[in-house]
Image 1 (cartoon, one colour):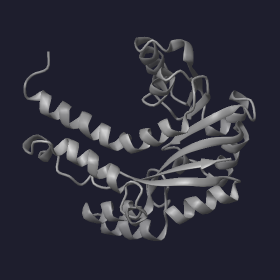
Image 2 (cartoon, rainbow, N blue to C red):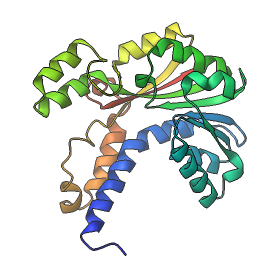
Image 3 (cartoon, rainbow, N blue to C red):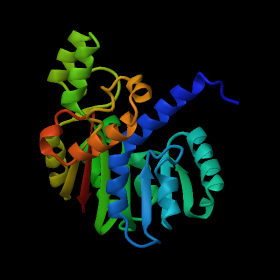
Length: 246
C-alpha cells in the first residue's frame, strides 16, 4: 500500500504525464478513422499510445529496439484486452522496410525518435515508403529554442550557446525548429496539415502548485490545449507535434 506521503508525488507525476500527452493524443485520435486501420508506432516502447490506439479497434505494430520494453508492451496489451491487435517487433526506424510491407500503413506514430537518427531526411523517406497513398504521420520532436532556454536557465550557459549554434550539440537528441521540420517534411514528399506546440507550460509550472492550488492541474491542461495551435507559441514549446500526409 502507498504511504500517504507518496500520493502527492504520484498524483503530480500522473498529472504531468497527462498534460504532456493530451495535445498529441487529441491529434492522433483525429487522424484515426473507423476501426481496422493499420498503425505503426516507431519507438513505441511499452505501448503508452499503441494500446490506446488498439483499444479503438485498430491493428498496431510497435517497432522498438528494447526487448524489455516489448515484453512490457505485451503485458499491458494483455491487461487491456487488446493483445490480438498489438504486435511488437524488435528493431528501429532503419529496419522498417523489412518489418512492414511498403505502402501498407494508414498511420505512423514517430514520437521522440527523429532526433536520434543520423539522417532525419532519410528517416522521413523511409516512413513515407511504408505509408499508403494519403497515409498520415504523427511526428513529435524536441524544439530547438526551448532546449537552449532550458539549458541557460539551469545554469549551463556554455552548453546553451553550443546548442544555439548547433541543434545536435551535446548529448541526447537533436532538436528542430518549426521551419526546419516543415522543410524536411516537404522535401520528403509530405504535406503538413498541422503543427502543435506541446509542453509550453508543463515543464515550467512548479510541481508543488499542482497540490496547493485547487483546480491547478485542470487549468494547466486547459492552458496547454489553448495554446497548442497558436503559431506564436511554437518557439516556446518543449516539443513540436506535426501532422502530415504522404
